[in-house]
Image (cartoon, rainbow, N blue to C red; front, side, top):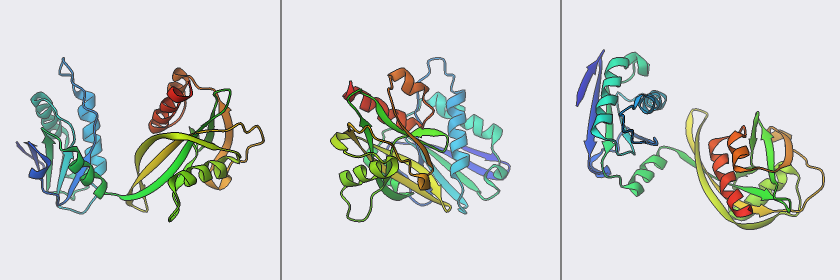
Length: 255
């Protein structure tokens, strides 16, 4: 399917595998696709549309975007119509001449993950979800959100040692014991106009520490506290989605 819109050619393709897609000038965007029996895809399409806009920031004249979802044909057509109605060359800062969007029918996850991660500089990190005998969780407050202590792994530093070090440095807590590996998360951000992918290894930890906390101010941490959190309270907590994910996994182990 091809759409010519105000100087911008948009090509939409459906392919059977990742190997049919050229890697040149290619990026991968993730989107949680949900089947809708009423074919009401407006919000999902808008989310993809915004991700397209925010991702095409290069100086390429051509750009390929892969969505790792398996949409129904109605979804593909609806998305094409949205592009045709709203998009223009100026929407992408007048840089692009051609935009190709590829929906993959049968996703080869390993290849897609390799492509996705190749777009970023990978920074390994480690952190901890610490609980006590009262089943309270140790939280830090940083930049107007509740968070868990974590940080970058230093050269040749074992991941578990990094996790303990970061927990102690950011909170001032002592006597922390690792119980088990809890989760692995990835999140993206820009640093000096370069895309960064931070991979964080999370550990479930326990401590009976009852002393005073020492928030690491240089890391913008202004408060450290123990909090009892139920599933409902985790949902209502002013924090990041990935932190909620880690907190819920930890709560299953703690309880």
